[in-house]
Amino acid sequence: MRDSIDDDVDWSKTSLSVDDAPIIISRESLTENCSPVPSQSSVTESSSSDTSDDNSSSAPSSVPDDEDGDYDIYLDVRDRMERLVAKDRQSYLFEHKLHEPPSIPFFAALTTYLGYTVLIVVGHIRDLCASLFRNGRYRSKAQAQFPSDDLTLFAPLLKSWENFYTRRLYHRIQDCFNRPIASSPGAIIHVLERGSRDGMKTMHVLNDGRELGDEVKREYMEGNHASIAIGGRITRRCLNLGSYNYLGFADDWNATCESDVLASTSNLPMSCGSSRMECGATALHIELEEMVADFLGKESAIVYNMGFNTNANTIPALAGRGDLLISDELNHTSIVNGARGSGAAIRTFRHNDAAQLEVILREAIVMGRPRMRRPFSKILVLVEGIYSMEGEYCNLNEISRVCNKYGAYLYLDEAHSIGAMGKTGRGMVEYCGVNSDNVHIMMGTFSKSFGGMGGYIASSKSVIDLLRSKCAASLYHNSLSPIVCQQIITSFRVIKGEDGTTIGKQKLRNLRDNSNYFRMRLIDMGLHVLGNYDSPVMPIMLYNPTKIAAFSRECFKRGIAVVVVGFPAVPILMSRARFCISAGHTREDLDRALKVIDEVADILKLRYAVSAFG
Image (tube, rainbow, N blue to C red; front, side, top):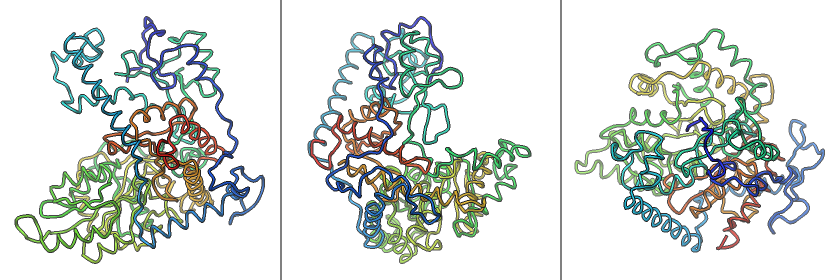
C-alpha cells in the first residue's frame, strides 16, 4: 500500500474509496456518503416468531435481575434467549445431532455459478484484448508502478489460474479486504480511507484530504462517520463487528491492563532478540506457561510468538512418517499446513461426525499403513473448539469418547474458544464437561480473548519437553515479547478474578449474552446463519460473488465494519459475511448494527430462510 499522494492527479476522474468502494467523486456520492445513519435505538422489527410484547427489543429502564445485583439489559428477551440456547445445546451436546447448515437455494446456486461464469468470461476477453492491443492495466508501462509490473522482463509471481483470479476477480473487490485501522480494535474502530488510481490494482491511504478539494472535503467531513486520525489522515468511524476482541480488553485496556503492562517495560525489553532455546526466556515466560498449565489442568505448557505457527510447527514435531493424522474436514489452514509438513499419512472425516471418525480409526488399526500393512506408530485426531468460518463448536464429547476407545491421541485447537467459552472461560473442555485428561494436546491463541498475540500448547510434561527440544517454533523463532507476556498474564488474572474484581466474570457473561442476542435477531431477520448459540462467531450466507463486495461496501458506508469471505477461503458457493461479537459491545451497538444489516439484507435480497430468491 502506498501512502504518498500526487498533487497532479485529477481526482475528479479517479476511482476513490470514500466509502471504501471504487466510485467517482460527485455531489451525489458525497450526499449518499454523508446521509444520516439509523439512530442507536433498539430494533423493534422482528419476524412472526417474535411478535409478542415480551419479546420487544427495547431494553427495560431499570429492572435488577442479575446474580451480582446489576441490571439485566436483556431481561425483555431473556426467557426466549435461554430457551433457544438450551434447545441448541441439548440437541448438539447431549443428543449428538449433527448441526446441518442451511442448504443453498437453487436460485442462489444458479446465479452464483452464473456470476462466476460472467466474471471469468469477461476477464478472459479483457486479457485477449490486452494481448492484441498490447495495452491494459497489467501491460501498460505508463501505468506500471513497480519494475516487476513489466511482464516483458519479469515472469508473473502467480501463474495460470491464481494469476487470473487475482487480476480479474480479486482486484475488483480488494477494497473490501486488508483495511488498515488507526485505533485500537475495540467496539468502535477508526478505519483509514483509501483510494486507487489504477482501477483497484493498488490502493493507497488518503493523507489529509487535499486531493478532494476544500469544498468536497468539507462536505465529506460533515458526514456521520468521517474523522481525522493522527497525522491528518482521513478515517471512517465504524462499529467493529470484525475483530477478535471477544472479552473486550481492547475497550477497557487502560482500566484493566495498562498499569501492569507499562510497569513491565521498566525492567524488561520489548523483544528478547533470541529464540527460547538460546537467550529468549524471561521470568514472565515461565510464569505465563505455569499459569496456562494451571488454567487448563495440564502438567506443563509452552508458549509461542504466533498463533498460526503454533499449529504449523507443533504438528510436524509430534507426528512424522509412520504416523497417521485424522483431521476434521473444516480444520483451519494452520492445521492443514502442519499436517502436510509432517510427512505423516493424512485422513479426513466429515465435519463433527464421530461415527465416521470411528470407522476411519477402525480401518486404520486393522489395515495399518498403505502397502506395508504395518501398524501406525501413533494416531492423532485433530479438531477445533470453535470452527472460525462456521461459528460451530466441536462435538467434543463423542469425539473424545471415540479417541479413548481406540487409543488415539486428541489434539484440540481452542484458538476461538479459550477465554470465550465455558462458565470460567476455560474453553470447550469446560463447556462440554469433558475431562481435560481426555484431551491429550490442547492448543490455543492469545490474540482472541486476551488482547495479546502468540499461542500455547498444554499437555503432559513429556510432550512439552519434546516440543522444547524439537519444535521449530521453540528452536528458531524469536520468543514471545515479554511485554505481551505481561498483557496475557494480566488478562488471565482478570478472567480468574485474581485482580480482586468481578470484571472477568462480567466480561464472560456479557460476551455470552451479546452473542446469543445478536444470533437470535439475525435468525429472526430470515438470514441463513451458521453456527451454534453461545458461539461469538456468526457467519451469514451471501452465496453470490457480487454480494461479497456489495454487503461490505453498504455496511461500511453506514458505519459498520464487517468481514466478508469468498473463494478460495470457503467453497465457491459458500461466500459469507462473518460477525465477531465482543463483551465490549453494548446493546445499543448491537441494535444499531442489526438495523443496518436488516436494511442491507433488503437491498441485497439476503433473506434466504424465508424466500428462495432472498
